Image (cartoon, rainbow, N blue to C red; front, side):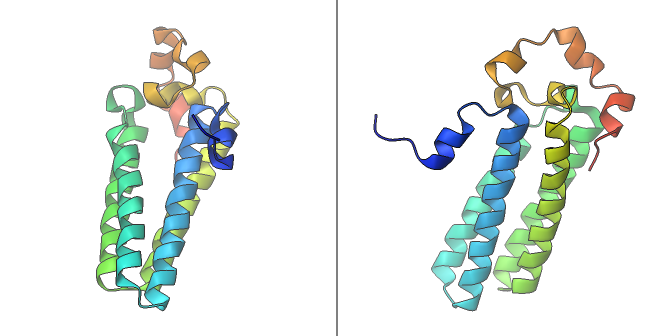
Length: 157
């Protein structure tokens, strides 16, 4: 099977929210790489980095659960669509400044997820496949209750 990378080992016991944060961190790393490629005039490298960012955003967007996440899922869907567009635009015009703007936005929402990670109630609105085994077996009634505006609006980014 081979050795697991440090990053893979670090995620073994991760909660769903921690996995989301790890995906945001990866997107930020690839955005920095794209910026570096703009500086070095490395068009191929920039395209590869941007494709990774776009893949992460599409993965996150595809796994949103509007049926459980309500207004939070809608806000995140809009956020991912905006970051997707801004990333492609930054690449198209080879703009370090625009990549910096995307990084700042992604980092803000990433930091909000870190706060969410400290709130056990928050994990209940995560997509099922991003929950850990323990989190998957929360009673459905509890998950639905987490969709109420009161419990969700506390941690809206």
